[in-house]
Image (cartoon, rainbow, N blue to C red; front, side):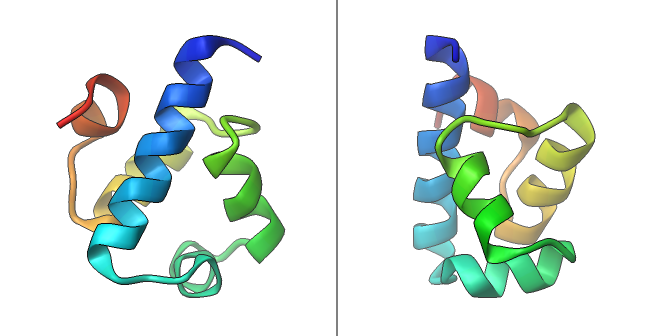
Length: 69
């Protein structure tokens, strides 16, 4: 796994926590399993489409997830 993917995963987790969502709540909003959200936060198995959905659910831009705040 690349360092960039790990950083994006960390930003996904930070954005989720800032929004006050649990992994289960984010999973429900995305229509995926809680395990999938865990993998995203580890920097695994996300696509650009997934990042778009996550960004919308947590109220940030894809650019913020990729480049940082």
